Image 1 (cartoon, rainbow, N blue to C red):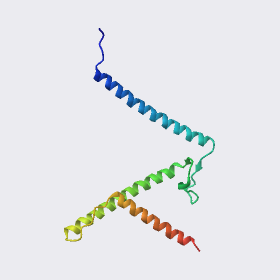
Image 2: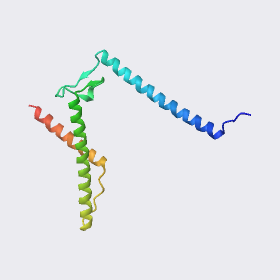
Image 3: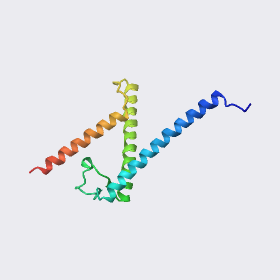
Length: 136
């Protein structure tokens, strides 16, 4: 009689096969999305990022062509924003601890969500100020 695979082996093989199929389906979807993007580029359905006041990413519905230097600048700015958020959180939490240690009012901890909300608030204030300047 031939060696019959154990039930444990068959379950493991089935599980691994299912996981592999899921990975392949995800890869197929990524390739389809890439193909759709490349088709749009070939048809000229793209926006060439000018890095000027005429770029409005919120209204884009097509792929954007961006110079590598612009992307590097964006990545550097994102890293700086992350660094500043961390510094703000740490500073605020240090002030909170110092206040409590000196008998002051206990401040709540500051989270990244709080900082994101503050950054959004500041951006909106700046945009409103700039819009007010533009009006005669």
